[in-house]
Length: 191
Image (cartoon, rainbow, N blue to C red; front, side, top):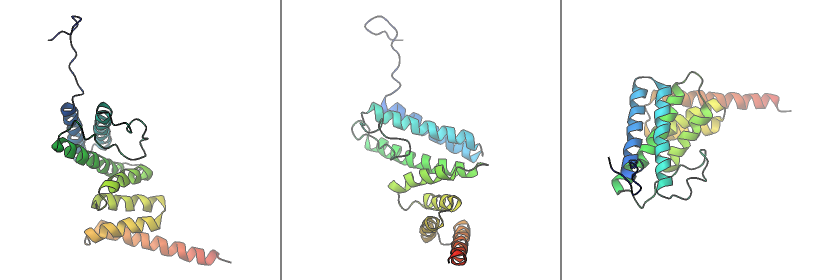
């Protein structure tokens, strides 16, 4: 136990960047285990905690934009000054994995929030435009939100990467069928 200048017990510093990185990665790992155990609500909580740690680290490191960003806008980027390249890379990868995993968890829920799934996937795609899982899940979200043309775009992009994925093929077929039905309905309703 150490004392400060006034003779009071010093509180340990919990916001050292390396410690925050470790905590964030630990929460992400715990979230992944919860997902594997089919504890989706618990996994969502762990992934959110990991993201909060990362956002807190941005504040500690003086990222001026982090406090003004809303949760639906761009995700924070890790400040380049205090972290090692390895830590920066780990945090950026963890951030994308958390958003992608959050989308996966939400898709497993009884009542799926497709708007949120779309939001998380688009955050991943802003940084990794070719991410198969984010492309596929975006397509699924847009399909269920009724935006079939955007759904088809994302599904076809994911199909380019994994042409034999049966889930992608099935959603492409469903989406094309919806687009055809909507076009037929519009023709019948036209004067």
